[in-house]
Structure formats: structure tokens, C-alpha cells
Amino acid sequence: MSDPLVRSKRRFAGVAVSATAAAVALGTVLSVSTTANAASTLGASAAATGRYFGTAVAAYKLSDTVYSGVLDREFNMITPENEMKWDATEPSQGQFSFTSADQIVAHAQAHGQRTRGHALAWHQQQPGWVASLSGTALRNAMINHITGVATHYKGKIYAWDVVNEAFSDNGDGSRRQSNLQATGNDWIEVAFQTAHAADPGAKLCYNDYNTDGVNAKSTGVYNMVKDFKARGVPIDCVGFQSHINSASPVTSDYQANLQRFADLGVDVQITELDIAGSGTAQADTYARVVQACLAVARCTGITVWGIRDSDSWRSGDTPLLFDNNGNPKAAYTSTLNALNAGGSSSPPTTGPTTGPSTSPPTTGPPTTGPPTTAPPTTAPPTTAPPQGGCSASVSVNQWNGGFVATVTVTAGSSAVNGWTVGVTLPSGAAVTSSWSATGSGTSGSISYSNVSYNGSLAAGRNTQFGFQGTGTGPSATPSCTAR
Ligand code: G2I
Image 1 (cartoon, rainbow, N blue to C red):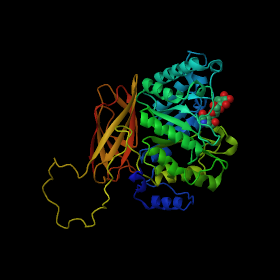
Image 2: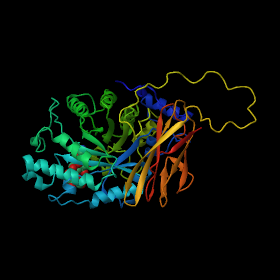
Image 3: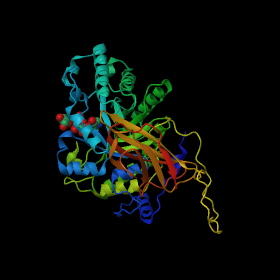
Image 4: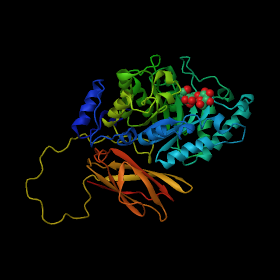
């Protein structure tokens, strides 16, 4: 079933943003300065439609101040590039090693970023000891590995790539032959069930490459996801790596492919985006990918696979958004402009996993003007809520001593032009930083108000803001007041 939200593009007020949207639609990349209506970083701009913008990070580069400066300014989701893989986290059987991955997760938590876990089960980057195992011994080793890693990071991971790259490229949509596949065709669902048992709050994803359009491989994955949903295997999301070059281009059905997966009732995410090339051609392709995600309500975020071109696993292709000095490229500008042009809001991260079953109202705004009579001189009754109003929900990642809270603000049956969300922290808790909203204080009862770019929400649409702090995060449902 096609999601009605897809056809309804979110609009921001402001001439500069509209011009940007028009330019992007024409396939032209302009360097448009940001305005009060447009967020000026990738993360903030993605957050305006309830999405994230992330990057792969290498722990050993965090001490590079150019690298971490761009990371913390632009990105609000981090995927450890190698540090959570099997060879890194369990170099000897049963001996877990989390030092580098912990460093990345701590960095993310300290900077208000979330973490995508990558990858629990994969035929590559296996430690040497796995090669001697097969059958039940390998299956049990996989279960033990997933349990060990997912338990260590329980509550700290937004989404896990539970299984990575399990389908073949041979054009028939079949599974890839691997030692894990040889343990039995049910290894993938066992991996998901194991991850769910260890970290029930995380979203659980299947992740692959060359699945970015409608093709035999993506259809193989599609059929697996459909089967998993039908049988209640706990899968929440599908990652599309999107390593783009001339041999693997962005096809005209890129968006339709994301949508057909979303229509199965899973979130979709672009998980390892990089695009070979330079200049306008590269910039235009980045904009196309961003537009496709923004047009799919369940496309909840985009991750690029590295920060500077020199950080890329294929640096010769100069495939990223920043040059070797950390300066933004044309591709950065086109990506930011495409994000600022908006799209359908992503669904809340909490609550039911299926979308709303009712369509949004199809009637337009009232065509009559404002009343011409003088305003009443008595105060309006304080009990009547604003028409439609808004609601808020909070999801908290809690760890020993601190938390990150993500709040989803959803407009009611009418558009809102500003919102204030009331959050109550337990005693002893204190907010250390917040994003995409302005808070009235740091402890007790705090009012968070929208910032310039995320106050306007069409009826039924949502946006997100967040804050992190020490102590215990909020547990009660926040209040929401619309303007
Ligand atoms: O190959 C690109 C990506 C395809 N999808 C899954 C991703 O996990 C994968 O990422 C790449 C990393 O970007 C590379 O950095 O995965 C490669 C293999 O795991 C990573 O390369 C490895 C090298 O093969 C190792 O020799 C090296 O020790 O990076 C390691 C750490 O630098």
C-alpha cells in the first residue's frame, strides 16, 4: 500500500528555501546561503523532518581535531566503521574486546549523537578462530557472539545491522554461500531472534549493497523481509548501503525500491552512502539520494561512509562530502540544500511500528480571511486547547549515569506554527546539552520550544529534538502545547 505521506511534500516558509527546492528539482546545484528557515548543518536539517544524518567513524581518528570538529558539527548518528565487527569484538572465542567500540559510543553519547551498531553477523571480517568451525559449533558461536555484543551495548544502540550482506550477486536473488549460510537457511532469523533477546529496545536491521534499485538481489531480500514480517521474526529495518559509482548507479527506481520495503512495515535507511565522482555530477547524485529518502516517510536517516575523501575505504573515488582538508564540497552543499527543501516527516520512533491507518485530511486551509471584528477584551478561556494541538513522546537511551532522550513532537488535526514541550526530569538528573529545541533550564520541569526551522508542522506531521544529561532520563509522557 502506498503511504499517502509520500505524495505530500513538507514545505518550509521562505523564499531562499523554495528557490533551493526548485533548483534541486531541476537537477541544478546552487550554492544558496542558509536563512533563518534553513538548518545549517546536515544533522539539524535532517532532524527537521524527524530523520538523522550520520557517518561512519574510525575510533583512532577521534583525536584528529579536524575530523572530530566536522563530525560533531554536522552529524547526529555514528556507525563504527570497523570496531563492532566480529574480528574486532571477539578476537579469541569467548574473549570479548570492546575498547575501540566503547570509545566511539562514549564519544557519541558525549556529543548528543546516536549509534548504529555494525555488524553482528557477516561472512567477512570474521576472526581467525571462526574458520575452524562449522555446523552446530559455528551456529552456537554466532549466537554467543551476538548475545555478547548486543548485551554489552544494550540500550545504547539506535539500530543494529544484525545481518550484513547475506545475499549473492549472481542475479537469481538467492542467498550468498558462506560458512554461516552452511549452518542452515534459518541462520538469519536466528540472528535476529538472538539480537532481540539481548537488546529488545534496538531496531534490528538487515543491511546489504547492490540492493539500491528493484533488481533480483533486492527482490530476494524483499521476499525474506516479507516472510519474516509474516512469521513474526523481529526485523524492524532494512539498510541500503548505496555505494554508488558508474557500475552501480542510482537507478530511476531507487525511491520506489525504498518505498516497497517501507510498505512491508519496516523502516528503511541509507546506511553507507558514498558516490564516486566530483563537482556538479556528484553533487546532483547526492541530492537525488537525499530526495528519495525524504520522499519515503519510513526512510528514517542517511549515513555517509566516512567524513573526508581521505577517510574513505575507496578514497581514490573522492566519494564523500568533505575534501581531504575537511572543507565542504559541492556535494555537501547540494546535500544540505536537499535536506532543507524538506520531505515527508518520518514516523515517530516510538509507538506502533505500523503507520497510521487513516489518511491525512485532504481539505485545504480555510479560504476565508481572518475576522474583521475587534478582538475580545476578556481573556480567552484557559481550558480550551488550541485547535488540533500537538502531542509528544519521548524515547530514552539510558546507561549507568547518563541518558540521551529523543522527543517526537506530532501536530494534531491542524497545522501548528510553534510548539512547547514540557518534560520533567527526576531529581538528581541534569541536562548537559540539547539539540533542535531551546530549553528553559537544565533540571526539574523544563520547557523546550521549537527553534526556527522546526516550529511549523503540517497536520499529523512530526519532528524530533533531543537532549542528553547525567542521572536518570525522563519517564513520563511529555506535554505539548501548540501555537
Ligand atoms: O567495503 C565497504 C563496506 C561495505 N559494507 C560493509 C562495510 O563494513 C564495509 O566497510 C569497510 C570499511 O570501510 C573498511 O575500512 O569494510 C572493510 C572490511 O571490513 C574495511 O576494511 C578494513 C581492511 O580490510 C582491513 O585490512 C583493515 O584492518 O579496514 C580495517 C581497519 O582499517
